[in-house]
Length: 127
Image 1 (cartoon, rainbow, N blue to C red):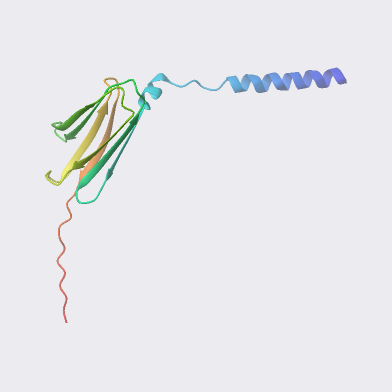
Image 2 (image 1 turned 45 degrees about the horizontal axis):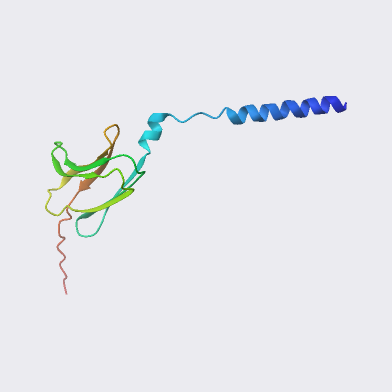
């Protein structure tokens, strides 16, 4: 009886050990996509804030493009930098779709920006 309990315990331990090593490995393409994090959000008065966090070691290029693909702004970020922030003034641009691209030469991350200027509302008070 004691031997069968020990055998059962050893079998259960082996099963737990095997399933813990059976975890899926990370896909290198997915890891490459997450080597830097990009955040874009609208600020006050027609400004767009851009934040980037990255691991040192790769040079990145940040560009602002319109729907035609024309580059409106471009800047290189050094490979030693671990963070980057920029505020874009979008007041001079026409309403429409724009996007910010970040690339390391292998992968590209695009963040869309939609510009819609609020038309002034006319308020009439009647006494």
